[in-house]
Length: 314
Image (cartoon, rainbow, N blue to C red; front, side):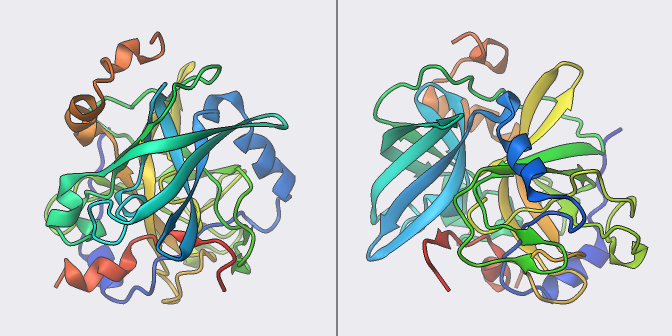
């Protein structure tokens, strides 16, 4: 059943949101479980970006969608002008067990709607794409979710963001390890106040229903929320025996306490990939999804977007 449940309550909350930082695990489950899930072959397409803009270095995440193209967030590849300018030394690394495979990037393209809306995440254009200088082999690209109807369901968030627990929020200096965790994709933008291209999940606290914002207050076994460094990483869903890329990590905010540090009660937003299939195909010449396996609220909310995570930042 489709859902469109981001309404006036969420809009009011967004008005009070702080800087968009988020992402960690439930406090009563060991970190090794999230590291192990990140290593699952279903999520082998998720890799790590390293790059510079001027004198600053950054870490982010991305999802391989064909041998030469990686999907990510527009704010990861916006550079210093929202259009990709000023980025240097960009590389993309994929991991298989203890082995890493590094590919240099030759082109990075934010969606044109990103600059046109001044980098406003609520406009729903926080999506970009990177072309690698050589083809990837030995890794299965992700398959895009292509149904127009998005049911309320469990999703898996995968990336290289900061770690911590719901009690502490994310901890600085912990980016760079691939992790994955689960969360219910509870809501979608209503298409009026917030773009229908946006999907939302909240961080439920075990035994404390008051810190649940959307849907059920019962956390999933591996409840998790995105963190700095997870930007551009994948939100996946599994239906039957198939796993699909539903969205890319975009932003987060502190819903219940006004502090966006990914503690319990915070929310995260993801850019749905479904609406961007025509743009992705036109930009990359990637085949149709079924063959991939074979081959104001504008400037006022600009501060909500997930910032690229600086390496060694304080």
